[in-house]
Amino acid sequence: MHSETRDLLIRGGRVIDPASDRDEVCDVLIRDGLIEDVGAGLGLPDGASEVQATDFVITPGFVDPHCHLRQPGYEYKETIATGAAAAAAGGFATVCAMANTNPTVDTKSILETVQEIAADQSSVHVYSLAAITIGLQGEQLVQMGELSDAGAVGFSDDGIPVASSALMRHAFEYAKRFSRPVANHCEDPALTAGAAMNEGPTSMRLGLPATPVQAEEVMIARDLALAELTGGRYHALHVSAARSVALIRSAKDRGVNVTAEVTPHHVTLTDEIVAGRWEPMSASLRPYDPVTKVNPPLRSEDDVQAVRVGLADGTIDCLGTDHAPHADHEKRVDYAGAAAGFSGFETAFAAVMELVHSGAIDLPTLIERLTRGAKVYGLPHGSLAKGAIADVVVLDPDREWVVDVAAFKSRGKNSPFHGQAFRGRVLKTICGGRVVFDLSEDPVETVGALGI
Ligand SMILES: [Zn+2]
Figure 1 (cartoon, helix red, strand yellow):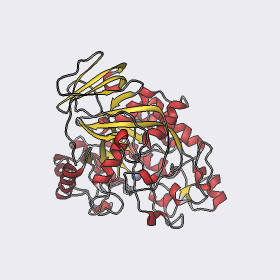
Figure 2: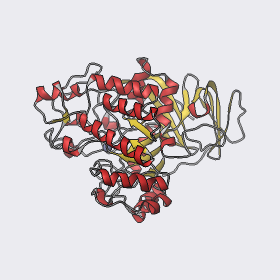
Figure 3: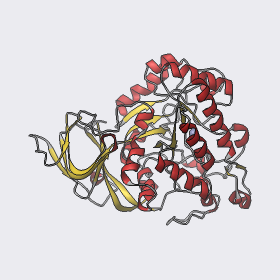
């Protein structure tokens, strides 16, 4: 699975490393899997290969704080190996996997099983969150100390909200002892029951059962209140609504220990695509296409604008893909009955580059948001500082391409971006000094990029 670690000199690219406050044209030297040096005019060491990156951007490998790799239990949707290959193709050198596998990651032995599979089969760094409650049942807390010691980077029942406020309070109190964040799927289950999309004019027109943004608002308000009460660390997953951004902004202002993430789809798509309409879309979707179904649902234009502003001003700390691969048969049913979620790794960077091209955010800030997940979970990644683990991506912010889900490395072909023309492409991903994705060597890619 692992390619050889190679010493590489990446020459002449625009190096953007927010962690080191660096944005300049220079070289990056990788030796023995580490960043050996960053600077202009570096010499080529004996035995090292050279990569010309003129006109390209060199950044730390992206860090995804939120994905679903589906193994164990749902290998028909994705495996750790296929998910890692998809992550690498998306520029992610580090991913954090959610615990809603089968069995649930709720004991040390299951966590260790996942870690062993990842160590053996993954091309990128895989970290695991553990569940908050046993079997995601919302009744009994997991052994947080034991799981934390075994390497769980945080706790989440993602996919299912923790309904009990008392249990959530205890989760914050226990996780705080181990300095781990608690990440809740922020939807009030009583307000989302039976819902298939966002409540608003589009759901009225389509006649689909819907859930209001208040389902997210009340859950985030509760979790912020409990984080404040306990002093625990709260990470708000996939924030989608303007009201949520306002709550998090005010909580941060008064010192609540909270971080937040948003997905690429919630900063780019509105609920109108459920009706088949989306102005920037070059591809066409038919109304009621279950490929647009996701939790939390796509929201209104006002919500999209608010989460974009929140991402730009830092109220929302990072981008998380919520990569959620499903099999075709789980999406090719009626809208209400379809599985929710998008296969997100391979379109994430291109989708969010729209924010840069439209002037909503500048490229260094976007790169910061694509790597800050490392800080949320305390991971030694997301930096090009000397001596850092050599996780590096080479990007072409202007490369035009059209998404074809048939070319996805993920087993999940469930993307609303199929057929979309994007501007911005990952050319090469290096993880721990190994080249784990190279567009120029990709069999489905006809355009040569960077051959080394
Ligand atoms: Zn979720």
